[in-house]
Length: 137
Ligand code: SF4
Ligand code: SF4
View 1 (tube, rainbow, N blue to C red):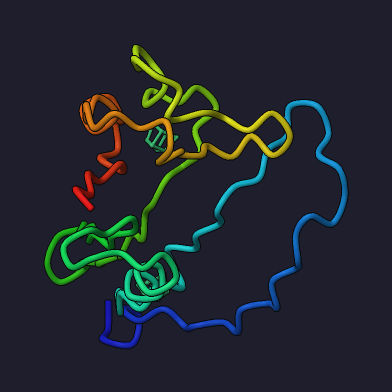
View 2: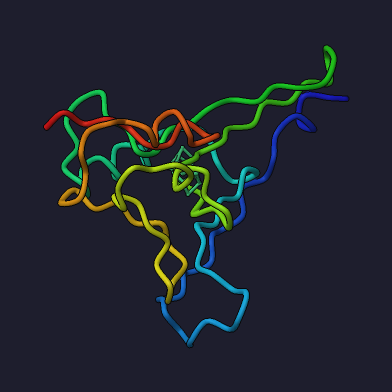
């Protein structure tokens, strides 16, 4: 493989459509779309998320990881930007002592309620993806 084959051509990203465009059909839910081929690992999404949500330092609701594969010289590296998956069967909801997490019946988005929250941090153990972050503030 020559050097040029190691690089992926970045395609212009289509203008995102505003949501909701229509009512969800049975079995559908909103989700966050991520294109690993387009991601360059700059972590601007982490910064933007923290600014949008006013998170203190060290609390990242979104994080960016790396995946490497292949054998030299045919190696590739991808970046994975991940946050809450709004899972179909959210493990963060299992065994919770109060309803601080709930899956919205209309959008199927998983929501956290700071008003119901009792600081037990059970969700941080239960989520398979390490998404919930304990914020003592
Ligand atoms: S790290 Fe985040 S902001 Fe940067 S390219 Fe990847 S998804 Fe986009
Ligand atoms: S917090 Fe974790 S388990 Fe809960 S919906 Fe998000 S990714 Fe799924």
